[in-house]
Image 1 (cartoon, rainbow, N blue to C red):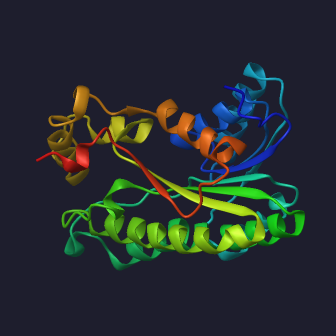
Image 2: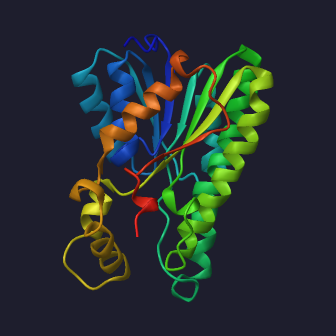
Length: 254
């Protein structure tokens, strides 16, 4: 299926590794020019080199901590001329309420919630002026199925689900679609570290979850990326304000 994305320009936050990099690679395979934003400049350069070696597209990179207001604002100019914005930045700590510090909670909300909302606002204003655009927010399953053992992810992702639904219902009036994707467990560098041997909070939680996963495995990052590419394409032209969960039905299993 031709997704009609060739020649489009996509900005992907958190695009230097994990799900974000997989999304960037999938969009590059469809012929999108890329702009990647992440904290670490060296990792971004590695991602740029990899993508340009695999696909004949231009890749621009910008190092920024989206939880820092001035650095977030420095990324706004990258939204000029963007057809697709994918918000995939922001690792959120796990733990019960008393296990997570006030500072960790603040950082999680600054990066993933406020960073995403502000980029959406700035992106939407530019897309509205151009008459078209798509925003895809990568959120997380705990926002749909709150976990008392993981208060930060539940609260952060729940806020982004509500935001995406409300913003996506209104953005269609400006010919811009806003949608969300809730990944379940996905095999990335981060989850590999969390599921390694050990007795930390994340390690214990992940080992418990892995034992019950459908097909006995996590999702592959490319499986998330394939959905994002479809949602960003004209093939999904009547979809906005919707959240798509990718967990093979795990949330319904005991």
